[in-house]
Image 1 (cartoon, helix red, strand yellow):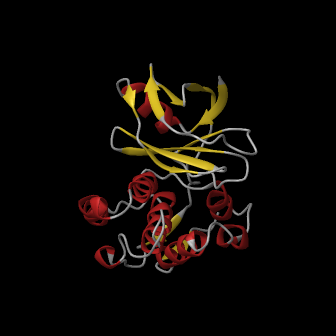
Image 2 (cartoon, rainbow, N blue to C red):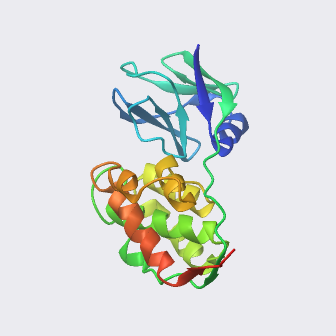
Length: 212
């Protein structure tokens, strides 16, 4: 048994699905990603980016995983149960803002770029997360993102859904809350952090903070 912490929606998703195999999408010493009933669920160690769709472990290095499955609402890696001991809040802070977010061209961004999270999707995630923080509904953009989700990677599609639910990386959350730095966000991944910042700034370009 390996203890982990979990974002609430990840825990709820695991509880809701039936028992069965979870195809491994990516495996490495820092992170493992598996498909669980159409969503990507990650398992990350201490050196990995704590994406909002992942279970978090205290392991410095993950074992070499061959197979994953869900049994009784618990994700297992090679038969080792990952038991959720606590929940972690991955929600963006609420920002008092007025105005409308800067526009975004969804069709030109979804799936654009290489890797598990294409750069264009990272830009959209940053944009969407800021609109949620500002409490601005974006139904047309959301609908277009969902309609194109199958054209990108499952991890990226899942992270786009997370952003639409106001869920983001801890470094990004801290930056929006004013307790972290933009440099910490930009250091994430090869280009993911820079994409998040680009999207966030695009959204913020049409918004103004309300004076306390």
